[in-house]
Length: 234
Image (tube, rainbow, N blue to C red; front, side):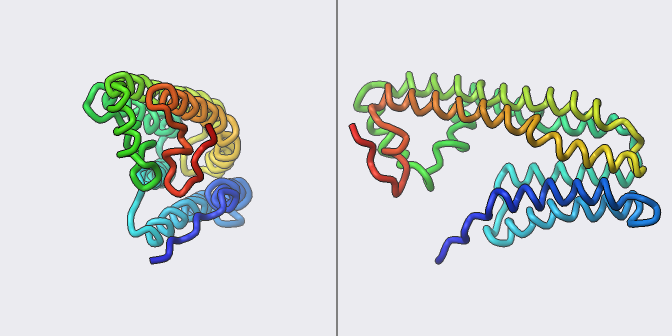
């Protein structure tokens, strides 16, 4: 079976961020689509993107499913004409709940970082385990992964705080109005560089720290474990 090529990240940004923002800010007037029509059309882009990904992969990844739920919640707030403060609660609540779940998993036998990073479809996990056992470093690695899971949880906490502050700052009008749609469009545009980029930097630092731990404890580079990659030069 041939694997579907991964979509361009720039196309994903255009479909899920830029197009919805333009629709919300430019088509919400009464002489155009109106607040409800513009909101429905704007949300159709990320929903359609997510459903298309589900169709191609025959299933939802965890993050994709969360994104769809978040989009539906935004639509519900707009269609039910709830107070704009509920949007800030939703924007902060989703990453906060995720961060809590990640933090709790750090104290279980399988911290969530294992499922997110050490995927058997990407990495040679048995080789890593064998190297750790040979060096007697299994428990030290488990401790490092628990610390990494708590670090990952902190990135969700930062995202929740930034989401809430930015949403309260930019979105203050009642849902279901043209002003709410315009503010939601601006929030969508601003949130990517203001929130996604800092959390991305934190995640990259976390990946580097985990990779350094694998090198120290197992004597392997991440590239050595990546399936299909060329071995690292000593």
